[in-house]
Image (cartoon, rainbow, N blue to C red; front, side, top):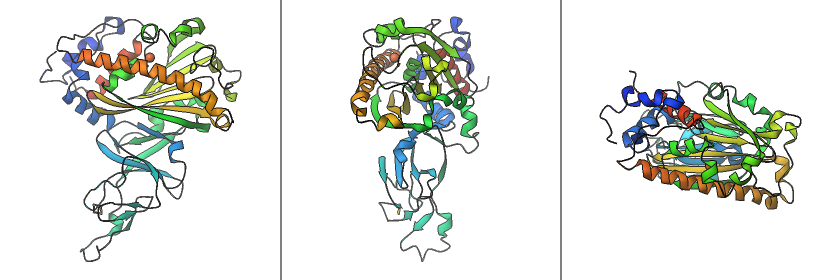
Length: 385
Ligand code: FES
Ligand SMILES: [Fe+2]
């Protein structure tokens, strides 16, 4: 499909705007065009609350996480006062990045170029040989802060000072998931994958069950239908969509594998027989099941490149058991197998939609959230009619 010059005019998307069973999928350029991707960076990633890490990764004063997100080098760091803060990873002298990507611990943030240094709260601590510079005020040369808030151990950064607080973005989600006691969970494994697909392709996959019988036919599908009593979309008040699957046993294990006991706070609740899986817009997937939780953190890198991080969360009391690693390996195995299946499917879809001969398709009744996600994206990026 040729990319129209007026790419963001609503008339190109009228078919996507129709109700699910009358609608078409997004035009293929939404997954391949650099202009569409740049608009998403500007209107989605630079406006939203972006999930960028777990509190387990920055547990002690001086612990930091440095990364580039939506084209912005930044870091999250825990202060001596235990407060988590985020800063632009750019020196106030001549702009060098301060911390290399990854995680670590430091007492001061020291620039590798001319050794300006910053306290963990971002204030300028030292600037050698600047005493002759006229009117130089150290108090005016602290790091540029970014908004940083957390919920349930998840760390979020927002680039937009006018955006509402995180609590408003989350809406009713914390109440819905309160019974899982997410604050008590520990991130026990974090695994990164580089995918050759647009971020929406992977998110759409994560929020439809239609592909399970095909893509996962030899793995989770083998017993999913036998144990599943239902799967439905629940009402959401906030910037998310959410499904609940009713079933026996843990969603995070393959049949027959040993697991941990159920989360104690679920006792007697409907949630003890199922799994909540919200997608917090734009791209944070979370699954809370009977005995653990897991998340998918997406970092868009370009129209056809996305970094995926899978995080495994277990109640703290499980992680101190002597047999923790042995039993956790069963969960890791299940996640690794199904993630690989989903990544292969997503990369295949990207190759297909990149073809000039790929046309928009139609949705089945089992893809309501793909349709909802695509329309949320259009709400963000299109020009007014
Ligand atoms: S650029 Fe950081 S001290 Fe010069
Ligand atoms: Fe899948």
